[in-house]
Amino acid sequence: MNYKEYLSLAIPFIISTVTQPLLGAVDTAVIGRLEHPSYIGGVAIGAVIFNTLYWLFGFLRVSTSGFSAQSLGSQHEKDSYYAYFRPVLIALIISSVFIILQVFIRNIAMYIYNPEPDVVIHAITYFKILIWGAPCVLIGYVNLGWLMGRKYVKETLFLQVSTNVLNIILDIVFVMFLKMGIAGVAYATLISQFYGFIIGNYIISTKINMFKILNYKSELLDKVAIKKIMGVNADLMIRTVCLLIMTNMFIAKGTELGTVILAANAVLYQIQYIISYIYDGLSNASSIFAGKCVGENNVKEYKDVISISNVCTVVLSIILSAFIILFKDHIISIFTNLEDVISLCKEYVIWLAVFPFVIGIGMVYYGIFTGSTYTAPIRNSMVISLLVFITGYFTAIPEYKNHGLWLAFILFSLTRSVILFLYKKQLLNKVFIIENN
Image 1: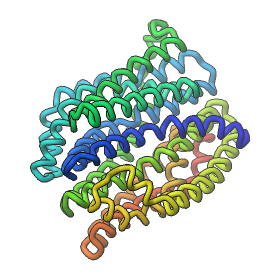
Image 2: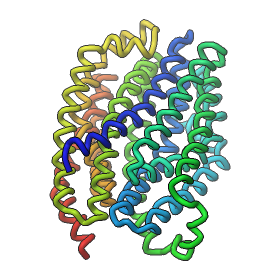
Image 3: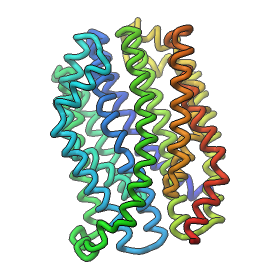
Image 4: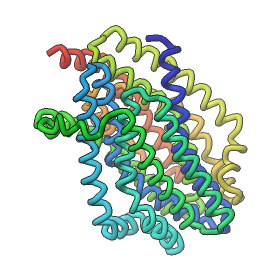
């Protein structure tokens, strides 16, 4: 294991994963050029509803990637089939529930966020269209996780980039040229979701014989295997619940502080997403290499993965922070031309310069832990981080308003990184004790 091998996987993963927040950035940018901040607010509320739904079950990609990587290390064919088809069944069930309960979900969301009336109209329009893409999104998570875990780098890159580029193109065409407004953004995303679903299934069908799962159907719902999957997924779900509580509290407070601050925070949060997804590329690479090492029971290479991940994280943090400081004006202007929103973004952008240093270790170690399918520390770190965020939320915001909100967010990210780093020694011992038993 060396830096060249690590970066040969990490860089394509960064390129592929960063197209996802870039998509959200384009959504914000095209809507940010319409005549009123309520359009940005509508997309922000609508997007956070789907982030809540999909992030809650984001374990479908993360755990699939871990189990898929371990099957690559063990080189057992049936393990690769189970790593794919078990989460597909879960995805079908969950997405069906979303569609059946869509009116209930929408009404609960509007009650929780309680945005201004014009924002409500845009958010509901966005939601009504995009809910029908739920099966494509969740099965798409499984497709992506399985391809990543098997180290199909070119296929992963093509699937994510082509899907998101299509979405970006349709965004521009539907909103800027056809003047479809919020509905244009939603339809662009929905079409792209169907495209990604079709292409992902086609790619996987070229890697495995879909019908061959019938040879292994007797063990598909094996109780021990399902228990392990659900144990990993339960930890990751708790982690995601904590993240969503934090995100929703953040968005809700921005709503309370007014439409212009909501719009400014939406812009800055899109930039934060881009930073996070850049680290997610490193996280995915670390996850695959860690999972493969666990499958091979290779302790030495596992330690190399941790060491290389640490160095790459520090270097990337320095680069990203410097880039934000040097080009903050240009970055903000990409997202909106509304002067009042731009002015507020410049006031709070300093928090984004700090963000890479507090989030990096947490994101990358998250990948190492998930690749090892040892997820209890992830759960614990997020529960503690949420408590820190809530403490900052209720103590800093009354005094510092929106600055206090961003301070609470930074403390949340820092706490997660520190706790996962402290779990490093236990991670190594626990994973390989489990495998040797």
